[in-house]
Length: 351
Ligand code: NAI
Ligand code: MG
Image 1 (cartoon, rainbow, N blue to C red):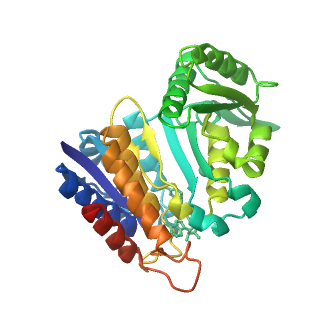
Image 2 (image 1 turned 180 degrees about the vertical axis):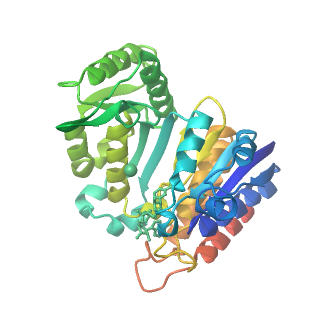
Image 3 (image 1 turned 90 degrees about the vertical axis):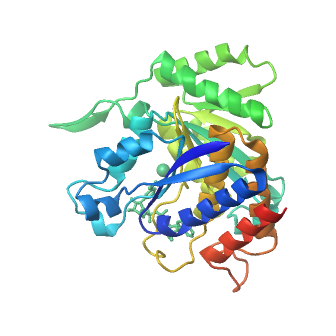
């Protein structure tokens, strides 16, 4: 297989974790006989420094020509007062790529159970949740205004927008443990009522998937009481934003959570974390979220399941052997970003 990947390291620790993910992709190429070519693209703060804008049109076009996009993180205090903030590049990329489905898997590795803020009686049953969040509609994109005596935001969803994200939810469940939880606030919101009706219609197409419906307030409670009851959660933009951060907390470190943003064209893969200016340049950032994002790219964009599994196995082994950065290290002994990358790369090549 021959694929072109646009690589945007971005700012801060993006410059440290993405090169490790690229090394792991190269190891996959060697072991499984694929050729990945990388198109390095500057965006975010780095682009503001170079070109005075977060993403040039020429660079955007280079990204749009790729088969998939791997991105580190954009932003940092240095650019907070620029007229155009680095994060604008991210919104532009999402919109231009048309990626409406954001998949955020959260897995609690048994050896890391003590990193979770939850008690062991809860975590010992395991946590392996995929949040499927709608990414380009709802409250964040609705009409809003500040008026003389208040302010308003609007949440609106079309049937098409809901159906296409529900489809991703059902398909994700089919690839996993075949349980889907539809999260809404159908006791109050019209958008949620529509969401629930469309989901129950789609249920008939997926008899193998067992579906349940939870109100978002109850879902947020169940996530900390019984995280093991969840397989795939599908929900609208705002609820998904909030619940996926909660699942992130449940598994311990932001440095572990990858994401895939999918649409009809090329997918965008990025760790959930930001540029972490507080630890940037120190070779201590956890590269696992970036590396697992590359694994998601192989699986979702290129259909390379065995290859993705090889990466996940290597990540698990590095965790089991304690070759981890200090955010998830259980004792004073921790590895550097590069050492974790070395271990995972070598494991993928050899096993
Ligand atoms: P952040 O995710 O960068 O950092 C939050 C905390 O988690 C920090 O203490 C950081 O050290 C730690 N952390 C994050 N990733 C880590 C990793 N891989 N290994 C170890 N520790 C890690 O969020 P923050 O501080 O709110 O934002 C920093 C900058 O990043 C801001 O400019 C923000 O706008 C930007 N940002 C960009 C995102 C993106 O490009 N998708 C997403 C979130 C924030
Ligand atoms: Mg968020």
